[in-house]
Length: 160
Image (cartoon, rainbow, N blue to C red):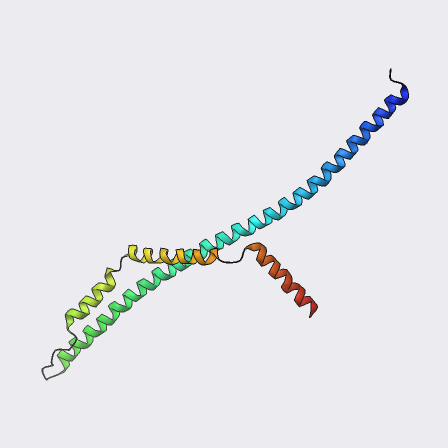
C-alpha cells in the first residue's frame, strides 16, 4: 500500500497546501480590509458632514426666528415713537393740528399684520428654504471628488 516515502510526500504536500492557503487568505484579508477601512473613513466623513449640516440648519432656523422677533419689536417701537410724537405734538402745539394723511387705523393695520405672522408661517417658510438647501447640496460634489481635488491642489502646491 503506502510506503514511508509516499506518506512523507503526502505530509509535505498537505503542509505546503496549508501554507499556501494561509498565505492567500492573509493577502485577500489585507486587501479587503484596506477597502473596508477606506469605506469606514468615507462613512465617518459623511456622518460628520450630515451632522454639521443639521447643526447649520438649526442655526439658520434659530437665526430667522430671532430676526422675526426683532422685526416685530422694531415695528412696535416705531409705533410707540409715532404715538409719542403725535401725543407730544397735540399737547405742545397751541394750534389745532390737521389730521395726518396717514390715519391711525392704517398704522394699526400695519402693526397687526406684523403680529399676524405666526410661528407656523415662519416655520413653513424656513422648511421651504431648507428643502431648497437640500436640493443644492444634492448637486454638490461627492466626497471622492473633493478628495481628488484636494490631492491635485496639494500636488500643485508642492510643485511651486
